[in-house]
Structure formats: C-alpha cells, structure tokens
Amino acid sequence: MFTKQKAVVIYLIFSIVWIIVTDLFMQLLRFDHSMQMIVNIGKGGLFVVLSAVFLHQMIKKAEQLKKTVEEEQQLSTLINSMPDFVCFKDSKGRWLRVNDFGRKLYNLENVDYLGKTDLDLGEMVPFFKETFRYCAQTDEETWKKGMMTRTEESFMTTNGEFKTFDVIKVPLFHENGERKGLLTIGRDITQQKLAETLLLKKEKLSVVGELAAGIAHEIRNPLTSIKGFMQMMKEAKKTNEWYIEIVLNELERIDQIVSELLVLAKPQSHCYKPFLLSDATGYVIHLISHEAVLNNVDISIENTAPHAQIHGDKNQMIQVLINIVKNAIEAMSQGGRLRLHIQEEGENVHVTIADTGVGIAKDRLKKIGEPFFTLKEKGMGLGLTISMKIVQEHKGTLRIESELGKGTTVHLLLPLYQGEKRG
Image (cartoon, rainbow, N blue to C red; front, side, top):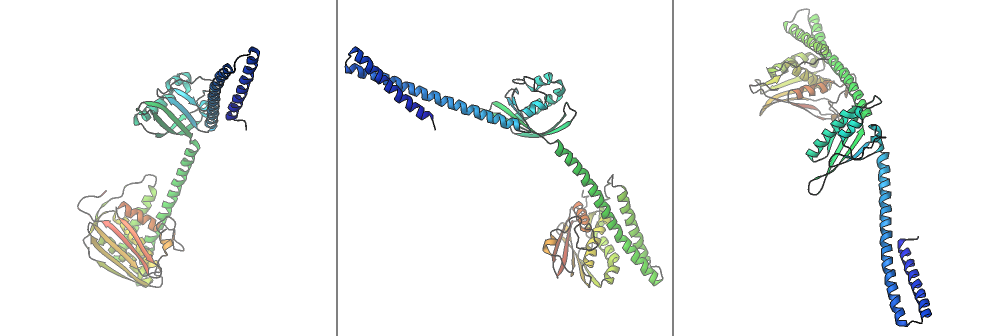
C-alpha cells in the first residue's frame, strides 16, 4: 500500500540523488573545489529536508481534511436517512442544519433556511406560522431549564394530516455557561397515538363488560339467599319474620346493584358513614348460615371488638364478607370448620376468616384477585377482584394465606372510625 511515509522517503531519496548528481555535473564543468561541492550539497540537503517536512504536513492536512469530509458525509447521510425530524440551531435560535425529513415536513425544500429563526421561517412559510412560534416558545423554555426536555407537539400538515411528535430538545452550553446550540429531535408517533386511543376504547369496553359480569355475579348471591329462605318458609308452612326481613334486605341489595348498573356511564360516590362492623358480620353469618348447614360447615365467631366502628359503605362491606365466606364454604364441600375472629389492633380492626378447606397452591395463590382468574368450575373470577377494590377504597388491606390440604385464611384489616370522616 502506498502511504504518505513511503511518498516522503521516495521524495527524499530522489531529491538527494538529484542534487548530488546535478552539483557534481556543475562542479566538473566549473572545475570547482571539493569543499565548495560539500557546502552546496549541504545547502541542497537542508532544502530537501525542509521541503519533505512541508510536504509531509501538507499530505497530513489533506488526509485529515479528506477524513473530515468523509465523516461529514457519513453523518449527513445518517441524519438524512432518519425517519425523524432532526434540527441544529445556534445560541440565537438560528437554524444551522435540518435533515431531509424536516425540510419535507415543513415545506423547506426550496427555502434558504440557513441562519433563519423560527419566527423568520414562520413568515416565509405562513402555513406553519403558529407551529414555528410554538417551537420558539418551547426552545426558550428548554434554555431556561438548562436540561433536556421532552414534550408532545401536534399540528396539521399541508396535506391535511394531523401529526403528533414526541419532541426531545437538548441545550448545549460552553464551559463558561453561555449558550452554544440546541439539538431538536422529533419522532412521529401519530400511529402510536391512534393505537393507544383504540386500545383505550377497547379497555373501556372490557371494563364495562367486566363490571356488568361482576354485577350479575353479585345479583346471584342475594337471589340464592332469597330462594333458600323462601323454600324454608314453604317447607315450614309458616311465615318467619326474620326470614322476611332478610329477603327484603336482599331485595334492597339487588335494587342497589341494578341502580349501579344503570349509572355506569355516570358513576356516583357511595354513601360513606360510620357503622358497627359487628352488624355487618352478624348479618352475613345469619345470611350464610343456611348454606353452611347444607354443606356441613360449622361456623364459630370470636368477636373481641363488638363496638368497633369503621367509616364506609355498609352494603359494600357486606358484599366483601359474603364473597369471602361463600368462597370458604365452597372450599369445604365435604364439610369443615369456619372460624371468624374480630379484634382491634392499634388504629385498625383485624378480621380473620379461616377455613379447613382444600387450600390453594402457591402458584395459583399469586393470581388470586386477578380479574377472571378463578378456581371454581362455574365461577367468573370477579368476586375477590371486586372485594379487593372495595377494601382499597375503604383504605384497608386484604391478604390471603393458604396451604394445600390445610385450608385458607383471609386477613382483612380496616381503619377504625376515629370520630371524623375518612375520605
């Protein structure tokens, strides 16, 4: 390979030989002394060395210039091939360079943009006047923050498309803190935004469907109770005032649930007020006792906090307790024991509901509470999902412990009512 070093060496050898031969020839013609010839050779050699050094520097600078030009071309090719808007501005906001995508986007193919500000370009391309004005404002905001900013900018293009860009602006400063330049990169995320909008609509439809399924699930519980107590009164052939009260309460719950279904498009806040937790648990135990007897499940209650009050929606808390207790009974198809323990713990009331059912495997336990995940053959997997949401709205926690073959324990922790409303 012919390098610059080889060129310099060849030049030196050729020059020295040329000087010696030339000087010898001239001395022979003039019959000059040998000392003069040596002096002349020395002068010629010095000239050759200086010439070689100069030539070396020229070659080096030429190669550096060539390398710089090549790098510049590569960078220009890279920037112009990008499907993003890329623009460099100086400290005054004047455009220094913009890629092909940017020129096409703003109709600048035949416009001399070099050295122009956004406001100048707005006058030259009136269609984008407001867009350029907004760009100037966001540039100044970026300079003031002194750090990279990221925003979404939307505008209409000349072909009638509404575009949205994810814009990143990077301010550059000199060592003394003065402004140096500004780099702007904008990625077209129009299709992504459309996809997000469609996904959001799909999610809303899914939530509506899930909620509707959940409401149907919750209506089934009071209907089962009503059916059971009506059958018991039919078999006994007499009216039981307690049974009638339960039936009426369950019908009221159904009415409330249906009302919620009718106002899905316009959710309304629940009526939160203080109530005794023992009233809710007592109601649930009376309600579920018939099913417990049918499944040979023995229920025991230990309540060391009979006066514990919580602030919330009593019907919603009844719904949570019914879901937990029914799951426990259904887990003991061959009979078993259900223990319910209520106690105060600091500023909270702790409700423990433990069964001796089949238990839940660890891998499945992690998924408990996820929508549509269920261990029941005919279940929809929404009971605990709704229950957890209700507990969270009451600023409480719901935790489940379980072991295969030994049973499941549900820990429900709720804040005690301290005499003032909790939002």
